[in-house]
Amino acid sequence: MRILTFVMAETLSAGTSLNEQIGNHLDVDMTGLWEPEDAFFDLLRDKVALHEILKETGGKEIANANISATVKVQKQAIRDNLKTAQDDGANARWLPRYLKFPFTAYTRSGAGRLSEMAARAQKLSG
Image (cartoon, rainbow, N blue to C red; front, side, top):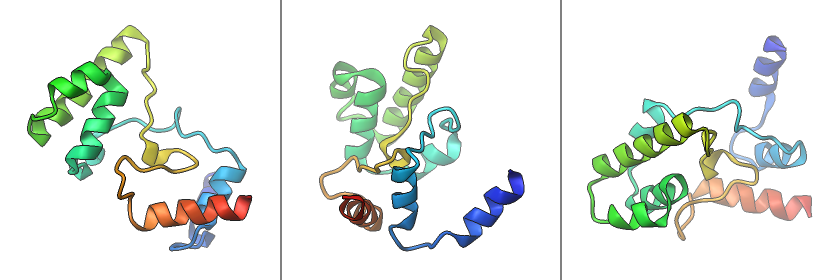
């Protein structure tokens, strides 16, 4: 299976909607396979996306209370919410929209090429 993973990764077409189509068709669920780590938080910079993630992980009230907070503070609030949820056993397996099939963005402007590929995949899958 490990070799098959690498073969599949090497043969999937980058820059096309093929990955999205396959993920949608196979109903891929990354929830049990992914955990937020520092690299994920380092890449988060958009305040609108952070606010939406904060809403998903902590609720609307917490997100609105932190709306004018710095990016650093909002990221820490997300981490705290995830830790609390993990300790409580509720919502412990949060998955960002970026890793779901079908892919959706956190902002109205979308996520550039990723949003285009997701839309194309949806159109092709009917």
